[in-house]
Image (cartoon, rainbow, N blue to C red; front, top):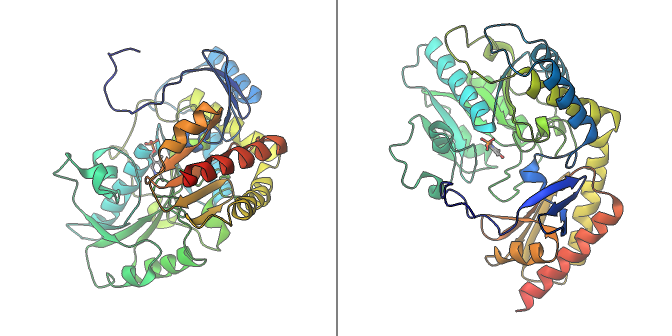
Length: 390
Ligand SMILES: *Cc1c(COP(=O)(O)O)cnc(C)c1O
Protein backbone atom coordinates (compact mmCIF):
# COMPACT_ATOMS: atom_id res chain seq x y z
CA UNK A 1 0.00 0.00 0.00
CA UNK A 2 1.15 3.52 -0.83
CA UNK A 3 2.72 5.53 1.99
CA UNK A 4 2.18 8.76 0.13
CA UNK A 5 -1.38 9.31 1.22
CA UNK A 6 -2.09 11.35 4.32
CA UNK A 7 -2.92 9.25 7.31
CA UNK A 8 -6.49 10.53 7.52
CA UNK A 9 -8.28 7.19 7.26
CA UNK A 10 -8.24 3.86 9.08
CA UNK A 11 -9.06 1.94 5.94
CA UNK A 12 -10.20 -1.67 5.76
CA UNK A 13 -7.75 -4.01 4.03
CA UNK A 14 -9.59 -4.29 0.73
CA UNK A 15 -9.46 -2.63 -2.70
CA UNK A 16 -12.44 -2.79 -5.00
CA UNK A 17 -12.05 -3.04 -8.71
CA UNK A 18 -15.56 -3.01 -10.08
CA UNK A 19 -19.16 -3.24 -9.12
CA UNK A 20 -22.69 -3.79 -10.35
CA UNK A 21 -25.86 -3.04 -8.42
CA UNK A 22 -25.42 -4.09 -4.79
CA UNK A 23 -22.30 -6.15 -5.51
CA UNK A 24 -18.65 -5.06 -5.37
CA UNK A 25 -15.69 -7.12 -6.49
CA UNK A 26 -12.20 -6.75 -5.03
CA UNK A 27 -8.83 -7.03 -6.77
CA UNK A 28 -8.69 -10.75 -5.90
CA UNK A 29 -12.01 -11.41 -7.62
CA UNK A 30 -13.92 -11.86 -4.33
CA UNK A 31 -17.51 -10.54 -4.32
CA UNK A 32 -19.17 -8.55 -1.56
CA UNK A 33 -22.76 -7.62 -0.87
CA UNK A 34 -22.75 -3.88 -0.21
CA UNK A 35 -25.07 -2.60 2.52
CA UNK A 36 -23.24 0.75 2.88
CA UNK A 37 -23.51 2.22 -0.66
CA UNK A 38 -20.32 4.25 -0.25
CA UNK A 39 -21.96 5.91 2.80
CA UNK A 40 -25.45 6.55 1.35
CA UNK A 41 -24.03 7.73 -1.97
CA UNK A 42 -24.57 4.95 -4.50
CA UNK A 43 -28.30 4.53 -3.81
CA UNK A 44 -28.84 3.31 -7.37
CA UNK A 45 -26.07 0.75 -6.98
CA UNK A 46 -22.61 0.60 -8.47
CA UNK A 47 -21.88 1.37 -12.10
CA UNK A 48 -25.50 2.13 -12.92
CA UNK A 49 -25.63 1.93 -16.73
CA UNK A 50 -27.88 4.98 -17.18
CA UNK A 51 -25.69 7.11 -14.90
CA UNK A 52 -22.58 5.88 -16.72
CA UNK A 53 -24.22 6.70 -20.03
CA UNK A 54 -25.16 10.22 -18.89
CA UNK A 55 -21.62 10.93 -17.66
CA UNK A 56 -20.07 9.50 -20.80
CA UNK A 57 -22.31 11.45 -23.13
CA UNK A 58 -21.86 14.72 -21.24
CA UNK A 59 -18.08 14.32 -21.08
CA UNK A 60 -17.96 14.13 -24.86
CA UNK A 61 -19.82 17.44 -25.08
CA UNK A 62 -18.52 19.57 -22.22
CA UNK A 63 -17.25 18.91 -18.71
CA UNK A 64 -16.63 22.35 -17.28
CA UNK A 65 -16.99 25.99 -18.19
CA UNK A 66 -17.14 27.68 -14.72
CA UNK A 67 -19.85 29.85 -13.22
CA UNK A 68 -18.75 32.84 -15.26
CA UNK A 69 -21.37 31.58 -17.72
CA UNK A 70 -24.82 30.01 -17.73
CA UNK A 71 -24.78 26.25 -17.32
CA UNK A 72 -27.85 24.61 -18.88
CA UNK A 73 -27.66 21.38 -16.85
CA UNK A 74 -27.38 23.41 -13.65
CA UNK A 75 -30.56 25.28 -14.48
CA UNK A 76 -32.36 22.05 -15.36
CA UNK A 77 -31.26 20.38 -12.14
CA UNK A 78 -32.32 23.41 -10.08
CA UNK A 79 -35.75 23.24 -11.78
CA UNK A 80 -36.13 19.59 -10.87
CA UNK A 81 -34.89 19.91 -7.29
CA UNK A 82 -36.98 22.97 -6.49
CA UNK A 83 -40.03 21.25 -7.93
CA UNK A 84 -39.45 18.10 -5.88
CA UNK A 85 -38.70 19.96 -2.66
CA UNK A 86 -40.91 23.06 -2.83
CA UNK A 87 -37.84 25.26 -2.41
CA UNK A 88 -37.21 28.39 -4.53
CA UNK A 89 -33.54 28.48 -5.46
CA UNK A 90 -30.47 26.24 -5.60
CA UNK A 91 -26.73 26.75 -5.23
CA UNK A 92 -24.53 23.88 -6.44
CA UNK A 93 -21.23 22.87 -4.91
CA UNK A 94 -19.15 19.71 -4.66
CA UNK A 95 -19.78 18.12 -1.27
CA UNK A 96 -21.98 18.00 1.78
CA UNK A 97 -19.69 20.18 3.86
CA UNK A 98 -19.76 22.85 1.16
CA UNK A 99 -23.55 22.71 1.02
CA UNK A 100 -23.65 23.29 4.79
CA UNK A 101 -21.07 26.08 4.52
CA UNK A 102 -23.46 27.76 2.09
CA UNK A 103 -26.35 27.31 4.54
CA UNK A 104 -24.28 28.78 7.38
CA UNK A 105 -23.28 31.76 5.25
CA UNK A 106 -26.94 32.36 4.41
CA UNK A 107 -27.77 32.26 8.14
CA UNK A 108 -25.00 34.68 9.08
CA UNK A 109 -25.85 37.17 6.35
CA UNK A 110 -29.56 36.86 7.10
CA UNK A 111 -28.68 37.86 10.67
CA UNK A 112 -26.52 40.78 9.62
CA UNK A 113 -29.32 42.03 7.35
CA UNK A 114 -31.47 42.18 10.47
CA UNK A 115 -28.80 44.16 12.31
CA UNK A 116 -27.53 41.25 14.43
CA UNK A 117 -23.76 41.64 14.82
CA UNK A 118 -23.04 38.21 16.24
CA UNK A 119 -25.49 35.84 14.61
CA UNK A 120 -25.69 32.35 16.12
CA UNK A 121 -27.13 29.08 14.88
CA UNK A 122 -28.74 26.43 17.09
CA UNK A 123 -27.17 23.02 16.42
CA UNK A 124 -27.72 19.62 18.02
CA UNK A 125 -25.75 17.32 20.26
CA UNK A 126 -24.59 14.19 18.46
CA UNK A 127 -24.95 15.85 15.05
CA UNK A 128 -22.68 15.59 12.01
CA UNK A 129 -22.36 18.36 9.44
CA UNK A 130 -18.93 17.88 7.83
CA UNK A 131 -15.19 18.42 8.26
CA UNK A 132 -14.52 21.99 7.15
CA UNK A 133 -13.88 24.49 9.96
CA UNK A 134 -17.44 25.84 10.12
CA UNK A 135 -19.14 22.48 9.66
CA UNK A 136 -16.92 20.68 12.17
CA UNK A 137 -17.68 23.48 14.61
CA UNK A 138 -21.40 22.87 14.01
CA UNK A 139 -20.90 19.12 14.51
CA UNK A 140 -21.89 17.81 17.95
CA UNK A 141 -19.01 15.43 18.55
CA UNK A 142 -16.05 16.31 20.79
CA UNK A 143 -13.75 13.92 18.88
CA UNK A 144 -14.31 15.88 15.67
CA UNK A 145 -13.33 19.13 17.48
CA UNK A 146 -10.24 17.73 19.19
CA UNK A 147 -7.05 19.36 17.95
CA UNK A 148 -8.84 21.93 15.82
CA UNK A 149 -9.61 24.76 18.18
CA UNK A 150 -10.22 27.65 17.98
CA UNK A 151 -13.52 26.61 16.44
CA UNK A 152 -15.75 28.85 14.36
CA UNK A 153 -17.97 30.81 16.72
CA UNK A 154 -21.68 31.35 16.66
CA UNK A 155 -23.14 27.96 17.54
CA UNK A 156 -25.49 27.19 20.42
CA UNK A 157 -25.86 23.48 21.15
CA UNK A 158 -28.98 21.72 22.43
CA UNK A 159 -30.01 18.05 22.79
CA UNK A 160 -31.52 16.40 19.69
CA UNK A 161 -35.25 15.63 19.57
CA UNK A 162 -35.93 18.07 22.40
CA UNK A 163 -38.21 20.96 21.45
CA UNK A 164 -38.18 22.49 24.93
CA UNK A 165 -34.39 22.85 24.84
CA UNK A 166 -34.75 24.91 21.65
CA UNK A 167 -37.57 27.04 23.08
CA UNK A 168 -35.34 28.01 25.98
CA UNK A 169 -33.25 30.03 23.52
CA UNK A 170 -36.21 32.03 22.20
CA UNK A 171 -35.05 35.10 24.12
CA UNK A 172 -31.50 34.89 22.76
CA UNK A 173 -31.52 37.80 20.30
CA UNK A 174 -28.43 36.48 18.47
CA UNK A 175 -30.09 33.31 17.19
CA UNK A 176 -30.87 33.42 13.48
CA UNK A 177 -31.37 29.76 12.51
CA UNK A 178 -31.60 26.11 13.51
CA UNK A 179 -29.45 23.56 11.66
CA UNK A 180 -30.64 19.98 12.15
CA UNK A 181 -30.64 16.53 10.52
CA UNK A 182 -34.16 15.08 10.13
CA UNK A 183 -32.62 11.72 11.08
CA UNK A 184 -29.15 11.74 12.62
CA UNK A 185 -26.90 9.55 10.47
CA UNK A 186 -23.30 9.51 11.72
CA UNK A 187 -24.70 10.05 15.21
CA UNK A 188 -26.15 6.51 15.18
CA UNK A 189 -29.38 6.61 13.14
CA UNK A 190 -31.58 8.54 15.57
CA UNK A 191 -35.14 9.11 14.39
CA UNK A 192 -36.84 11.95 16.27
CA UNK A 193 -40.43 11.83 17.47
CA UNK A 194 -43.07 12.52 14.81
CA UNK A 195 -43.81 16.25 14.65
CA UNK A 196 -40.30 17.34 15.71
CA UNK A 197 -39.61 19.30 12.52
CA UNK A 198 -43.09 20.82 12.52
CA UNK A 199 -42.53 22.12 16.05
CA UNK A 200 -39.08 23.44 15.15
CA UNK A 201 -40.59 25.21 12.15
CA UNK A 202 -43.21 26.85 14.37
CA UNK A 203 -40.51 28.13 16.73
CA UNK A 204 -38.57 29.45 13.73
CA UNK A 205 -41.61 31.30 12.45
CA UNK A 206 -42.34 32.83 15.84
CA UNK A 207 -38.78 34.10 16.17
CA UNK A 208 -37.96 34.88 12.52
CA UNK A 209 -35.26 32.15 12.46
CA UNK A 210 -34.41 29.98 9.48
CA UNK A 211 -35.11 26.25 9.68
CA UNK A 212 -32.10 24.69 7.93
CA UNK A 213 -32.28 20.96 7.31
CA UNK A 214 -29.15 18.94 6.65
CA UNK A 215 -30.51 16.22 4.34
CA UNK A 216 -27.12 15.33 2.96
CA UNK A 217 -27.63 11.74 4.13
CA UNK A 218 -31.43 11.55 4.36
CA UNK A 219 -32.23 13.26 1.05
CA UNK A 220 -32.90 11.79 -2.43
CA UNK A 221 -35.12 8.97 -1.25
CA UNK A 222 -33.05 7.44 1.52
CA UNK A 223 -35.84 7.56 4.12
CA UNK A 224 -38.67 6.64 1.75
CA UNK A 225 -39.57 10.18 0.67
CA UNK A 226 -37.64 12.42 -1.70
CA UNK A 227 -36.65 14.39 1.39
CA UNK A 228 -37.11 13.30 5.00
CA UNK A 229 -38.97 16.53 5.89
CA UNK A 230 -41.77 15.32 3.60
CA UNK A 231 -42.79 12.80 6.25
CA UNK A 232 -44.23 15.88 7.97
CA UNK A 233 -46.15 18.77 6.44
CA UNK A 234 -43.33 21.25 6.78
CA UNK A 235 -41.01 23.02 4.35
CA UNK A 236 -37.62 24.24 5.53
CA UNK A 237 -36.12 27.63 4.71
CA UNK A 238 -32.80 26.04 3.77
CA UNK A 239 -32.12 22.46 2.66
CA UNK A 240 -28.72 20.86 2.03
CA UNK A 241 -28.08 17.83 -0.18
CA UNK A 242 -25.08 15.92 -1.45
CA UNK A 243 -24.31 12.21 -1.05
CA UNK A 244 -26.85 10.40 -3.26
CA UNK A 245 -27.49 13.29 -5.62
CA UNK A 246 -24.79 12.19 -8.09
CA UNK A 247 -24.72 8.45 -7.27
CA UNK A 248 -20.96 8.87 -6.74
CA UNK A 249 -20.14 11.88 -8.90
CA UNK A 250 -19.30 14.64 -6.38
CA UNK A 251 -22.11 17.18 -6.16
CA UNK A 252 -23.65 19.16 -3.33
CA UNK A 253 -26.57 21.53 -3.27
CA UNK A 254 -27.96 24.15 -0.93
CA UNK A 255 -31.60 25.01 -1.61
CA UNK A 256 -33.35 28.00 -0.09
CA UNK A 257 -36.87 29.32 0.08
CA UNK A 258 -38.59 32.66 0.58
CA UNK A 259 -36.61 35.13 2.65
CA UNK A 260 -33.55 32.83 2.59
CA UNK A 261 -33.51 32.45 -1.20
CA UNK A 262 -32.13 35.88 -2.13
CA UNK A 263 -29.72 36.47 0.73
CA UNK A 264 -26.57 35.60 -1.25
CA UNK A 265 -25.84 38.06 -4.07
CA UNK A 266 -22.90 38.36 -6.53
CA UNK A 267 -19.64 38.53 -4.63
CA UNK A 268 -20.96 36.73 -1.52
CA UNK A 269 -20.27 33.13 -2.43
CA UNK A 270 -19.05 30.93 -5.24
CA UNK A 271 -17.16 27.88 -6.39
CA UNK A 272 -15.08 27.00 -9.44
CA UNK A 273 -16.32 23.47 -9.99
CA UNK A 274 -19.76 23.65 -8.40
CA UNK A 275 -22.64 22.70 -10.65
CA UNK A 276 -20.53 21.90 -13.69
CA UNK A 277 -22.20 20.23 -16.69
CA UNK A 278 -20.83 16.79 -15.80
CA UNK A 279 -21.91 16.69 -12.15
CA UNK A 280 -25.34 18.08 -13.02
CA UNK A 281 -25.77 15.51 -15.81
CA UNK A 282 -25.19 12.82 -13.18
CA UNK A 283 -27.71 14.53 -10.87
CA UNK A 284 -30.32 14.72 -13.60
CA UNK A 285 -29.76 11.06 -14.48
CA UNK A 286 -30.19 10.07 -10.82
CA UNK A 287 -33.51 11.92 -10.50
CA UNK A 288 -34.76 10.42 -13.78
CA UNK A 289 -33.89 6.87 -12.77
CA UNK A 290 -35.44 7.33 -9.32
CA UNK A 291 -38.67 8.50 -10.91
CA UNK A 292 -38.71 5.98 -13.74
CA UNK A 293 -38.30 3.01 -11.39
CA UNK A 294 -40.44 4.50 -8.66
CA UNK A 295 -37.80 3.61 -6.07
CA UNK A 296 -39.01 5.92 -3.34
CA UNK A 297 -42.26 4.17 -2.31
CA UNK A 298 -40.34 0.91 -2.65
CA UNK A 299 -37.75 2.16 -0.14
CA UNK A 300 -40.49 3.30 2.27
CA UNK A 301 -42.22 -0.07 2.20
CA UNK A 302 -39.23 -2.41 2.00
CA UNK A 303 -37.29 -0.37 4.53
CA UNK A 304 -40.06 -0.94 7.05
CA UNK A 305 -40.04 -4.67 6.24
CA UNK A 306 -36.27 -4.81 6.66
CA UNK A 307 -36.51 -3.06 10.02
CA UNK A 308 -39.22 -5.45 11.22
CA UNK A 309 -37.27 -8.48 10.03
CA UNK A 310 -34.17 -7.41 11.98
CA UNK A 311 -36.31 -6.80 15.07
CA UNK A 312 -37.88 -10.22 14.72
CA UNK A 313 -34.60 -12.04 14.11
CA UNK A 314 -32.82 -10.35 17.01
CA UNK A 315 -35.68 -10.12 19.51
CA UNK A 316 -34.15 -12.86 21.72
CA UNK A 317 -30.89 -10.89 22.03
CA UNK A 318 -30.96 -8.91 25.25
CA UNK A 319 -27.70 -7.17 24.27
CA UNK A 320 -29.38 -5.54 21.29
CA UNK A 321 -30.47 -2.22 22.79
CA UNK A 322 -32.53 -0.87 19.91
CA UNK A 323 -33.15 -1.34 16.20
CA UNK A 324 -34.31 1.88 14.58
CA UNK A 325 -34.51 3.54 11.23
CA UNK A 326 -36.50 5.04 8.42
CA UNK A 327 -36.52 3.73 4.85
CA UNK A 328 -33.15 2.29 3.90
CA UNK A 329 -31.38 3.88 6.85
CA UNK A 330 -31.15 1.36 9.69
CA UNK A 331 -29.24 1.32 12.97
CA UNK A 332 -28.79 -1.68 15.25
CA UNK A 333 -27.46 -0.49 18.58
CA UNK A 334 -25.68 -3.02 20.81
CA UNK A 335 -24.76 -2.69 24.46
CA UNK A 336 -21.04 -2.72 23.63
CA UNK A 337 -18.52 -1.42 21.09
CA UNK A 338 -18.85 -3.56 17.96
CA UNK A 339 -16.38 -2.15 15.44
CA UNK A 340 -14.93 -5.63 14.87
CA UNK A 341 -18.23 -6.67 13.24
CA UNK A 342 -17.19 -4.64 10.19
CA UNK A 343 -14.06 -6.79 9.69
CA UNK A 344 -15.93 -10.01 10.39
CA UNK A 345 -18.59 -9.07 7.86
CA UNK A 346 -15.92 -8.12 5.32
CA UNK A 347 -14.32 -11.56 5.68
CA UNK A 348 -17.77 -12.99 5.00
CA UNK A 349 -18.25 -10.90 1.87
CA UNK A 350 -20.62 -8.37 3.43
CA UNK A 351 -20.09 -4.61 3.71
CA UNK A 352 -21.63 -2.93 6.75
CA UNK A 353 -20.73 0.14 8.77
CA UNK A 354 -20.50 0.81 12.51
CA UNK A 355 -21.05 4.33 13.79
CA UNK A 356 -20.73 5.84 17.26
CA UNK A 357 -18.82 2.68 18.19
CA UNK A 358 -21.81 0.56 19.16
CA UNK A 359 -24.31 0.94 16.31
CA UNK A 360 -24.34 -1.13 13.13
CA UNK A 361 -25.50 1.19 10.37
CA UNK A 362 -27.03 -0.10 7.17
CA UNK A 363 -27.50 2.08 4.10
CA UNK A 364 -28.31 -0.46 1.39
CA UNK A 365 -28.64 0.56 -2.24
CA UNK A 366 -32.25 0.84 -3.40
CA UNK A 367 -31.51 -1.74 -6.10
CA UNK A 368 -30.73 -4.53 -3.61
CA UNK A 369 -33.00 -7.42 -4.64
CA UNK A 370 -35.08 -9.65 -2.37
CA UNK A 371 -32.57 -12.47 -2.35
CA UNK A 372 -29.74 -10.10 -1.47
CA UNK A 373 -31.81 -8.61 1.35
CA UNK A 374 -32.42 -12.10 2.71
CA UNK A 375 -28.68 -12.72 2.54
CA UNK A 376 -28.05 -9.46 4.41
CA UNK A 377 -30.51 -10.39 7.16
CA UNK A 378 -29.22 -13.96 7.53
CA UNK A 379 -25.52 -13.09 7.46
CA UNK A 380 -25.70 -10.03 9.66
CA UNK A 381 -27.98 -11.46 12.34
CA UNK A 382 -25.75 -14.54 12.55
CA UNK A 383 -22.64 -12.35 12.89
CA UNK A 384 -24.31 -10.30 15.62
CA UNK A 385 -25.41 -13.43 17.50
CA UNK A 386 -21.92 -14.93 17.33
CA UNK A 387 -20.35 -11.63 18.35
CA UNK A 388 -22.64 -11.25 21.35
CA UNK A 389 -22.08 -14.88 22.40
CA UNK A 390 -18.31 -14.45 22.74
C1 LIG B 1 -21.87 13.07 4.99
C2 LIG B 1 -22.56 14.17 5.69
C3 LIG B 1 -22.05 15.49 5.65
C4 LIG B 1 -20.73 15.84 5.00
O1 LIG B 1 -20.70 15.58 3.64
P1 LIG B 1 -19.29 15.57 2.87
O2 LIG B 1 -19.67 15.35 1.44
O3 LIG B 1 -18.50 14.44 3.45
O4 LIG B 1 -18.64 16.87 3.10
C5 LIG B 1 -22.78 16.48 6.27
N1 LIG B 1 -23.94 16.21 6.90
C6 LIG B 1 -24.44 14.96 6.95
C7 LIG B 1 -25.75 14.73 7.64
C8 LIG B 1 -23.77 13.90 6.37
O5 LIG B 1 -24.26 12.66 6.47
